[in-house]
Length: 402
Ligand SMILES: *[C@@H]1O[C@H](CO)[C@@H](O)[C@H](O)[C@H]1NC(C)=O
Ligand SMILES: *[C@@H]1O[C@H](CO)[C@@H](O)[C@H](O)[C@H]1NC(C)=O
Image 1 (cartoon, rainbow, N blue to C red):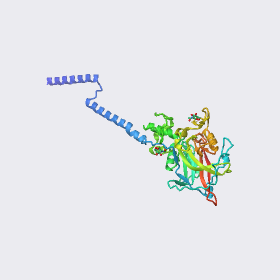
Image 2: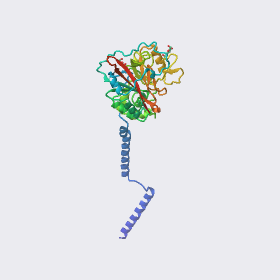
Image 3: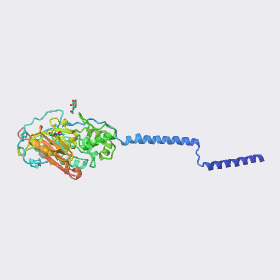
Image 4: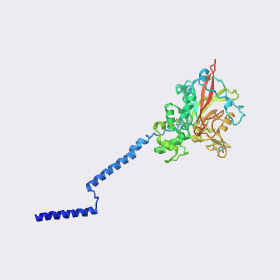
């Protein structure tokens, strides 16, 4: 009895003693099995988190990658205008532009202009590949101003079935609703010209998705403005959110569109409308390479604002550069003098600084909507002359305050 109790005592005593010692040394000791279990659990959680951040979340927030294709330089507009009756044209409620509505840098003119002929007989092309529309509507730099665009289109009574709309580049960035504008252009099958801002966005898109930089069909990739790095430019932030359909639309905007015959005002025809060929481009054209527009340098077409004198065979986007002269001024002089090897009216945007500039051979339609200016549309159509098989080429300007 005594020994048992002693032994119990001893055991009890000694064991408590041992425990006390252990507790004092490592009070929070976790059993090895639990430790292993915790490590396994921790690893699992870490792997799950890693997977979420590296694969799952990016897939949810980074749109699918769309490979870039070559950007076309000059493309024909796939539309022919069907001449309309005067009654129909009157029902649109638009006044037509007269010769005096055009500003000119120099007033001596038309003496050498032998190309203009008004009321000419026109063979309506029967090209089944082309869409038939009644009006061609060109709109200057929209820059994400969706509401103003919609208001402007209401003013001109735009109808998708009847009208071909063509935006002259820089329809995204700067303004508040680039994606709304993009979706609207895509949904309504609206034609586009690439602007410098669309091009920068494509460059940033390529950088973000690890694709080769954008390039031009049958041309070398120009190096202008490429950063090749992640950055915080508005173009980069926009590029990150582009979905494949957006990229496809922008990528397929050519640098130039050849519009076919367009109205040409002339004093000689007493304000009536002759016609000649038209080209749409974002910034401008060089005076060389007019027979084959594919030989134009895309960098000039997207960025130029001025020619550099005295030869005017170089361009700059900075009007304050030494020797810089507004490209449209020289272009009009040379066209009027018949000095260029192709008669072309150029429709362009890009130059909000100079604003709306309607001249005989150039129509500058960037009237600075993002800077509180206006959004401008040039509407063109062909009107049948009563009692004859001839047509008049007509155009007018419609603007929306921003
Ligand atoms: C590009 O080059 C190919 C072959 O040289 C030619 O067939 C094609 O017409 C060219 N395309 C353009 C847009 O110039
Ligand atoms: C521009 O023209 C001048 C005179 O013809 C010539 O000397 C010069 O090399 C030309 N510049 C370019 C960039 O073609």
